[in-house]
Length: 112
Length: 110
Image (cartoon, rainbow over all chains, first blue to last red; front, side):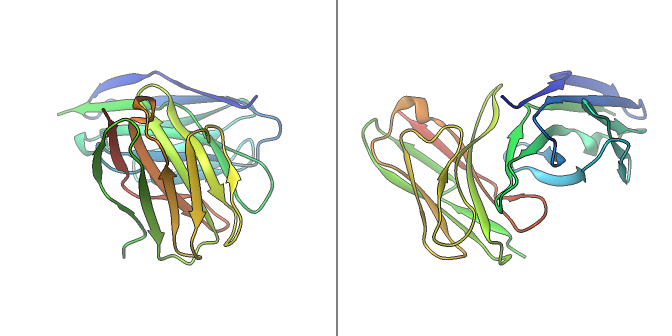
């Protein structure tokens, strides 16, 4: 059974205090790993897709990396507006519809 | 630039009532999905539609039905609502890349 585990469940940082969020996965043949950001009362917003171990993607203060067993979302010098829940998901199935299995998320709070 | 639009945004039902959640996308995507999100459990796939005219069960389909009305619209129906179906429901669509989500329907079953 495909499993996705995110840690920590919650993280509080001071503005400017860099840290990393973890997403570990157990799947039979990874086809893609996705990172999303979710603000309260909103739907998930797509951030990154990673397809193979060693791949990295960056966007502003965020950098996502991928190994064979886990992915990290590194947040450099965060600002209060980076506060959100960050979700990771793995793609299962190879058909035309890409089924995703989601982790339960990391709730990030950045204090000014 | 609407993306994925879900209606209604909020709904309260009594046990046993029925209702349909609506979803429409304007990105010309072939695939559409319905998820539910519960505290501590992440998003779970209810049903999906790989293309117009096809639907398949996801992880938690019991108590739900879906209709892919056309390429743009994918509806989710609760025939006889139960308190266990209290949740936030998200619709998403995709082509070859990532899934794009609407802002959800918050549903309470009393």
